[in-house]
Length: 456
Image 1 (tube, rainbow, N blue to C red):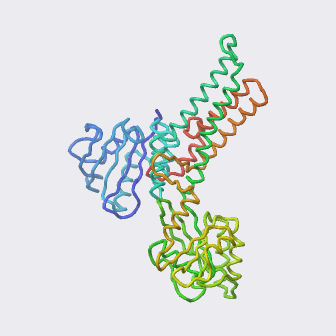
Image 2: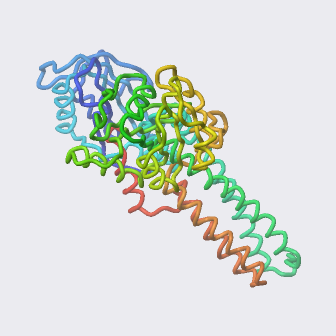
Image 3: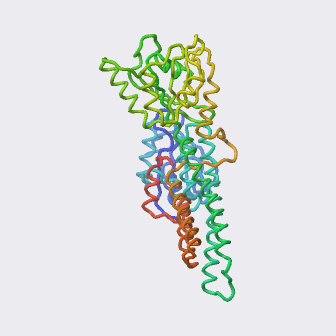
């Protein structure tokens, strides 16, 4: 077990609220809190997983009325003696209690140190530790559920099974090389080829999930483009279900980008409404147009809004030229009016998905939501047993493991000696171990946990 000093941190946000929680963990946590707590019994004499009522005091002066949650080792998040102090949620009170803990011998926790201790003490692996941060920062229901899956060990089970299979093959090769009289390797390369291909397939499934997983975690960066008065701001208001943008009949009303986050089918969209794109002599409007064009490169999805009540013009053509290589959904807006453009005409002209849409009648809204799901998740965003890789570090480890397994196949094709197989198999074994933290160095571990929030 990882032995350490005692740490403390405010685990709730630093805002005035009804309740604020301070977390303490380490070998001396019970004695330290006992030194500033007055209750019916000393915490050292209380049973684990009980709640004690009392007061935090300083020189016999009552600082706050509190509840103490006591969790003795190893039945705690960190597996160490851990105490959570439920104070009243005033910022001044929390800071005062925290300062008393520090005076009594604790120190301020480093970012992520509580979760780091849980990892070092073997309670969770590194993939589960990373899922804690993902869970905290989840901005959609599906992202939250995916983080919970990883926290429960879904990824760990897959990685452990793959590493066990790799280790078995490596041990077999080493045994055969050491004792050729009892192990026959005559047909083994072809047997190994089938097994490695199966391993690559399983790794590929995880790698392929990263594109969807990254979107699930970060949200779809969605850019609304169109010429002035095409209905871009009305679309933003419709999607966000509130009057987020000013809507007028005056061209050029929107001059800067407006950002809004919404959820569609359980997936977060980071929507950016932009200035109408056209040639203009207005300096302020031109800046807005330039910002809109600069935003194209960073967009995952572009909603190109066309006013179907007006013929196409040079502004529409200019926009489509800029976004032709991007993921685009064309919205023929104002379908509740007399239309001058048809879906078939636009679809044939631009070869992009086209939806007739009305911000007034909401026609096409459900179709748009379904189309977005189709484009990014092949229509199969699931919240049941589907596991998505959302972490770029883990995706990199999987890619490295796949490359090492592919090297095994190359060695088999080139009829290399069997010890070449074991070298690349062990490389894959170690790369997969980096996902769960079994083959990770201290510097990388410190970097990962430094990105966590203080209270965890």
